[in-house]
Amino acid sequence: MDFALRASRLDSLLLRHQQWWRFNVYAGAAATHLDNHNTLRDYLHSLSHADIHDLQGDDQRLLTALRPYFEPATELAELINITPAGPQLSPQEPPKGIPGRKWQQINAFIAAQANMHRPVLEWCAGKGYLGEAISQHYQLPVTALEIDPHLVAAGNARAKGDLPLRQIIRCDVLTDDVHQQLTPTQHLVALHACGGLHQRLLRIAVAHNSPQISLAPCCYHRFNGSYTTLSQQLKNSALHISSSDLRTAVRQTNTARQGETSARRTLQAWHLGLRELLPLLGADKTTNLPSLPQHWSKRSFAEFVQVQLDHKNIRHALPSGLADFEQAGWQQLHRAEAVDLLRMAFRRALELRCVLDSLLFLEEHAYQCTLNAFCSPTLSPRNLLIQAKKRQ
Ligand SMILES: C[S@@+](CC[C@H](N)C(=O)[O-])C[C@H]1O[C@@H](n2cnc3c(N)ncnc32)[C@H](O)[C@@H]1O
Image (cartoon, rainbow, N blue to C red; front, side, top):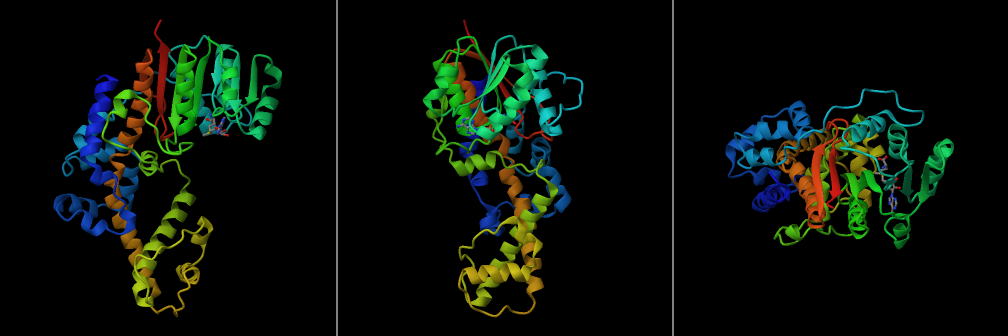
């Protein structure tokens, strides 16, 4: 299926089913959302915590499980199916200082390249680990751009022996300074450049007629005041994507640390439990409650409740039987996570719509493009790789 057709089918599927992916179950209406969908609701309510956890981390498994109960699942599964890139490089120990997971992503990124023979410009490079690996693997000169002076200094300390073949330059790619770093022969590469930063890369590449691009995008909502559609095809769409929609696109926690996930869930359950308690304390269930930092999850439910009440100036003694409210919060969280699987079912589709927007923009500017999954989602859920070559 070509990119234009895939984008158009995804766009109309997302448009038709907005009620499922624009719905925030944690805002409290999970119970009524499925009123006219009894078999779907029964299925979701039958899931254990372990089932939910498994399905959250695997888009295709989730869609297969939902297929008997949820009409859009079949088409979603077809449209989000992306071919994995070819064979991986044989595993090697990471060079000193490069974290193991980042090193595996870099190796997968390099193995997925169709070819590399041009001088490389690395975009938003951090300490330039990707450029370091490319320059060693292909013996190519690499210039890397990074805004953070500490990362630039640390990266250049690593690159010392490789000068002038490799250097990291402090540059804010969102300013005009970036233009002076571009030459007509460069291959632009970026691993996990966030939303507005990779859109900038694409615009700059088009403006400079850059001959080759390899881009693994991430965090579509970041560095984007509001999401700007790049391609003419999707500019004509009736679907307008907001920053909160884009957060849904990257909502996948299978690489989050277990401690973080557990702290987040505890605070969510307590939050829901407190909402049940509020009417007993003379406050409205929908009172706006602040979110607390993760370390609060180490305290008790009673302490959590007390600090929230103090914050809201609600002066009322805590009732007995607080444990029941805590328990109710955990039950509600379980239900909400089950129903939220429906939003998760559209996660990859939303991500892919952003990526297809980039691909269509490049095609509209005479690039020939491919799209692959360069690594497994367990290594990084942001595993889509755009490769583009300017047509002669
Ligand atoms: C998600 S990290 C990716 C780093 C690296 N490519 C990697 O995969 O490890 C994004 C990087 O973009 C850099 N960055 C953010 N804004 C930037 C800007 N305006 N210009 C250049 N770099 C920027 C950040 O400092 C950070 O190092």
